[in-house]
Length: 468
Image (cartoon, rainbow, N blue to C red; front, side, top):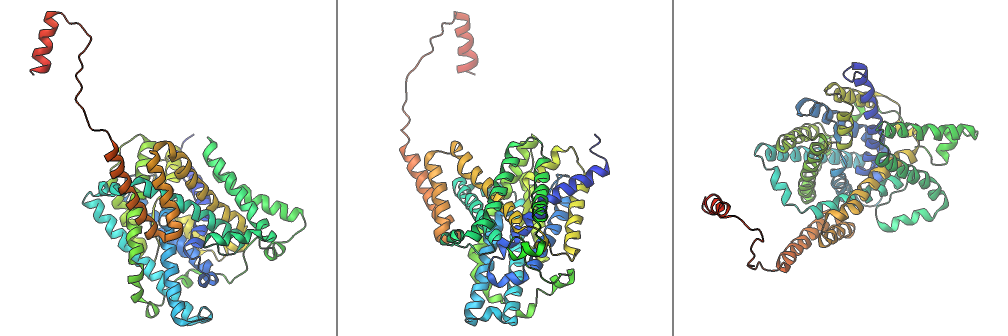
């Protein structure tokens, strides 16, 4: 087949888009999981997709990889979610009970959150550009791998949590919230999403044909509607049962700009999110370097990590200034595109135009797409991360390092992101000191070779080895 034909560019762009768009809606539900954002979740979801448009255009323009796919990524999700929750909680706490019903207060929360998250993303981009320009990517390696692994494993758990929450339309923010699944209706809504997530994980890991994942992502909602209509139910019946989202007014593109009123932005809340932002800088930079290294290994070619980190920085800077969110290379889809044999930037550009079509469309994706399917994409990402950073990584680490990873994972759950990562670093330092101190001292041992040499060979060794 001629993989350089424009028709193939269109096909592979559509395949990438099929895999991207459901995940982006899921990411929006993670970032804006506070209840005050829910009436505006459709507009906020489109803002996440619009941010991915900016990321993709930047990667297609500046990356040395012509086949690169870049968009809002999972590495920064928890930090963005933590910052959005901190901003919303602070404003609502100041206004008192019932404040979330006040339109002015909601506008203040929305404006502050979107602007401050965008500013955080832009500042992150500026730092990454400086790191790349001054060739400081190696400095990122000083963050202990077990600590980053524990964080990435927690992202997996967090995505599973958010996926199940999306399935049952109830917020799951802490371990005790899993008790929602004791309700029979909630359990019924969650089971298909969990099963579909496991199915997607199996397909992604076991199937050699890379087209099977996007095909599976199309088949799942199609099967849902076949079963729905075969049983004589309407989409309204499904909506009443909680299987699809509630109806809401369409969101034209211009309404996205109405989310921000600069006069209502609470600039004083910047100081509350700075510690979280610092953690995001370390983790996103480390994660981006890992993505580049993984792409390089799969290609079998050396890549300039600092140059690619600069590209990620430019993308985040532009995205943040446009009111967007953190993003990076999408390893799986970049490699998928690489393996197709296409080496054209047209694929990334067409992916971006597909995202633009979704943003422009007045169709509410959440009204017609099964919620368990959107949840399953998050469950899939979560299971994949947990399997990679809890199961597969075990044989790559020393036992003490693996314990640091698990300790970081658990600590983040109870101490928050910064506290958990900070504790993980402290434990990693103690582990390093203890392991180093436990190594036996070097002792000189006299040994001689059992080989016998003729006089001329001995003379040659003496002259050219010992005395050279």
